[in-house]
Figure (cartoon, rainbow, N blue to C red):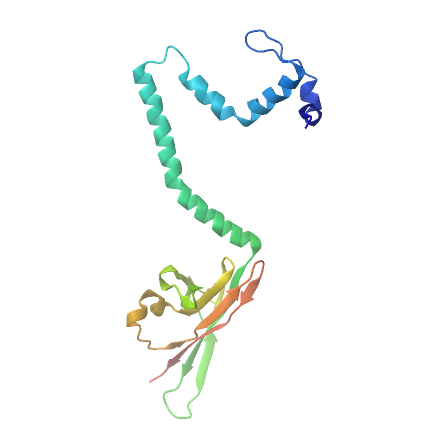
Length: 200
């Protein structure tokens, strides 16, 4: 491949090295590619190449580099999580819907009341047809009973918060709708949830 054709303006320039040597035409393009793609290498080489660098100065510089690497290593998981959340929001995949509270009369033939209310529930990913409760997120709808959450594509279980927190000792006092749903890429699925309680 003719690299000069890719960078016609760069090849037309006259480049002189530090020792006064004039670069040939082919070398000009290679020099510019190296110069723009590897500034970090140039900086590090200049950082340690000075003959005046003492052992103490070298150790101080090494400590700074180690500290920077440690900081980046610590921040990387949070950055990755933020990127995954941002990706889900950009694709607009997730769940939305309402939460309704139904109260049934404890008397035979009694009336039931229902209203949109703020409720807490759990959303857990499904693997091998089983909810992974330890990875569940707790969601709370607003005061008008509406919720919207961004999620990566995949299957999910939606159910009572108490069951997700302690599935082995879950003893419900109310009945909460348990639903399984598949979130698709670029789609927001609507799921309306109902919790039913019984009046004395």
